[in-house]
Image (cartoon, rainbow, N blue to C red; front, side, top):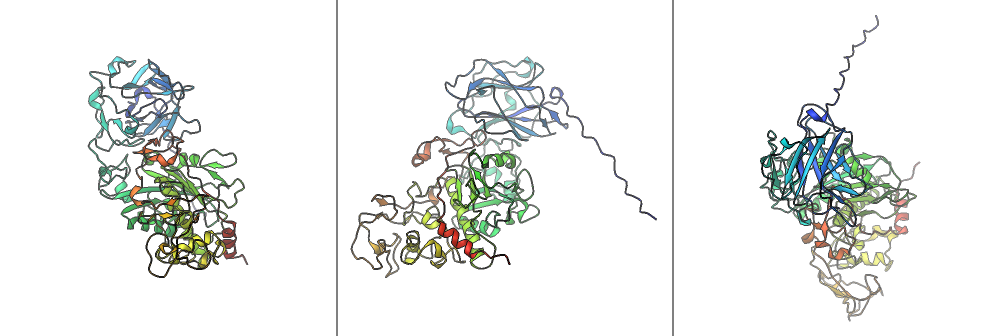
Length: 597
């Protein structure tokens, strides 16, 4: 007898979205804003139990030109919204379109009228309208603009908004628990921590006592940030927390898939210095939420944070290359944008996909990429797996260091300073720090880089504590090294961190120790100067969305007080310039790679 087929349930049709006119749409959050090209934003909330269409809805507020002469309108103007649907209980963010290269997604729409964008400062009025009537309205400061429907505002204005560059990250919110709309200032509260795209769950009294950019209220059990349970992800009050979403391109190249051992190496270094870094690789190493295996819930697409492969990736819109920012727009939850760094493990920055620099990152920013594709890295035994893990770990730490405000010389771009004992320094990024700076171990990196005294990139496995072994070391500098004067170098000082006895730095590579001081350009910058160490750990800028940063195009040597990193509207910062690896190194790694039989 033939089996009776299992009956299938009749499909339940998805209810048609209701119109905005009867859904009770709310303006739930309004950003602080200081200028027409600063990227003002607001959040819309659908408190109903139905899907709502934004078709026909407009934003009515003042406008300002996003470029010179930055003229501001005296009366409100209308900005049409996209015909998207807003889920029941959902949130949607509208952002002034300062950068034409940004794209809308399921959480965000960037809006403008020609060169005019929405604008308010300490004073303003923001209104949602539909069919000539007001859906919701809020007025603050000394604004006298009236809503289209007079019944939608009563009484005094909300107090003036904070409106300086240093106030970025503050906002005006309808606090939780959400109350019935009284159409008055009583509905609103000014808070120090904006929560775009999520619940307004950070209290007005919240503080960030550990200066990690996360309010203490979200670092305790039961606390959340925009609905995100950061405590479950590992955040704690009085602990400096760093969150990084790690996406990777789908590839058989071992250098492109992030290894959990490499991520753990980075986490261990930070933990030893009192920082907790939390990586999220989605389900790559754990099928469900598991912070210990780097699953913090993953990106918007779900799964293992896997991205479509592109042979070339850039931080900008380089012709022929995919853009990191395009991937980020589709993958990073907007609720994470003020807290999470974003890192892509990709193939290459070269147009042809060949081996190029190991990575690139924004300085005092939040975006980075590691590009170790085509390097010949593999998962074989011995030196192969150690090179893979150590190069991934050191490059991730190096690029994140740029995000934290560090340069190749610490507080300067001056690279190859032997006494700057840091993974940020090219002398130590890939070769590692060595076992002890008070011996010849660290200075072997100088010989390697200068192809001297039998050391070269082609035999990097021969240096002490090399990346080919398990005793490899990486770290940021603590600044404890003394300065080295290139006009008067003493070889017995080694790299400026003491001498265990009988060791010396053979700066002139003549094979013997010189007792007297001499001059030598040891960092190869064609000058003789005093080289200084830098306290990396004491100067990490980890609260990227709440402090001043450097995206003005000015010298990054003065990066501490420039302009704010506006992660919603202008999420592009100046990047550190990275060099391609030595060809000899790539050849060596390919020679170690197991061959197919």
